[in-house]
Picture 1 (cartoon, helix red, strand yellow):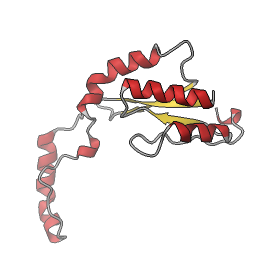
Picture 2 (cartoon, one colour):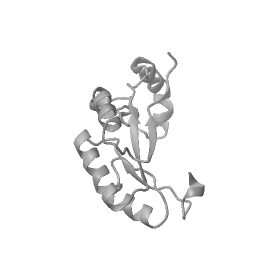
Picture 3 (spheres, one colour):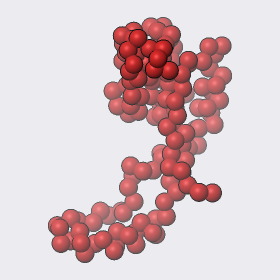
Length: 142
């Protein structure tokens, strides 16, 4: 892929961040590969942004989240936090009210909407985005 670009640069698709259609178009027009972050967007917003980018360039990609439920064991996390509590107290670190990090959890709406989002993306049009990347949730043994 990089050897086909005038500038060997792929824009990071930053979900919830500064990524948007204008940035993806600007990067692609400058010779790199502009990427859309579709992770937190609705199907409608994702489709509209793909159309906006396609109007400015044909060389772009879309990054999708492949959500998975948080596989962590809340009781094990709580036990771990309890075991670390004395060391944390010595350092003046207060234990959070909930040991579980909200940053590692996939929002439930993404998990339940994945089938719809995936179908919409695949059937989007005669001409799907030329490049797709996937951001997967944590891998858990089955």
